[in-house]
Amino acid sequence: MWLDWSKRQHRGLRTWILIIVRNEPKNGVEIMNEMEAGSRGWWRPSPGSVYPMLQRLSEEGLVKKREGDGRYEITPQGREEAEWPSRMRHGGPTTVEGVIDELSSYVSYLEDLSNSKDPKLTENAEHVRELARRMTELGKSS
Image (tube, rainbow, N blue to C red; front, side, top):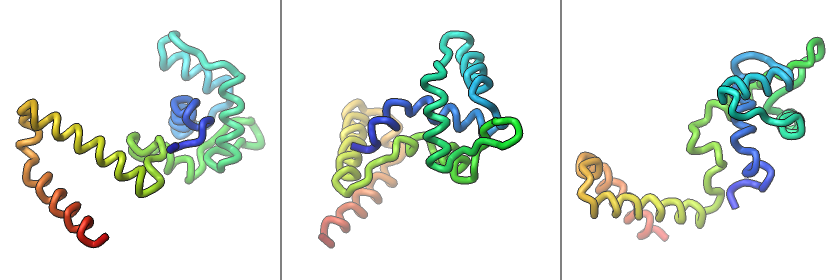
């Protein structure tokens, strides 16, 4: 499992809060208002979701609550997490087996591209061959 359940369950909320406070310190109500505005009124998170997440982010050192106005501001660690490439926010594989499983999924995708005669694969054929060569070398060293 790539993440514990609490992170997986609220991954979107977690990321959205970090992005909001990255731009400007906000309190919980302001965060909920910005989320509602960002969804054009379609969704407003509940205090029962936002405040526990702010507490968790605070405990993890990703945000800190300011003394004077009670607004949350992002920390350098939180900024790093908010700016990390989105494909890595889920935590990615943490074991060799997990990496191999993910690689297998990508190989299946590339095989499907090849079978469908998609030009994207042809345009990158040399790079694919180089990666295959490197993987072959890894297999020899085991």
